[in-house]
Length: 143
Image (cartoon, rainbow, N blue to C red; front, side, top):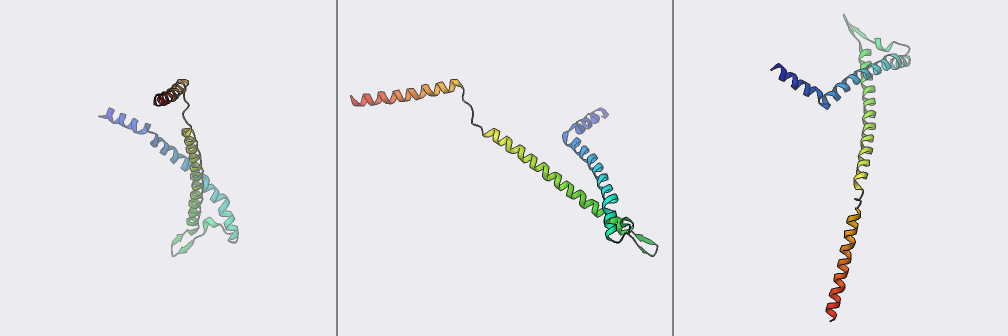
């Protein structure tokens, strides 16, 4: 039972789409860290300067004993938008590359087949036989 389950698990893991998904998740996590750093260390201070030198990430409202950190929420929205824009452009580039690859495949498929020497010779013999047959029919009708 355990051996069979282990074999099924190996087949499942070895499938391409599972490995692709795992790689995508790992790269996505690393990319998310880069974008978060971009927002925290570059964009947030610039937006803070525009807002009058305030620390944008620490913007908050205190209501009774509760602190509502809307600056961190806005920062998360900026993270999301930057990631979405980057993914949009990556998908757009990949689609262009895939379309170029498909166009090349279509161009290769459209090429007319090259006839072998034997086929060309057989076609010439056929044409000569047809021509000879027409000449023979004409001369028979004339008699």
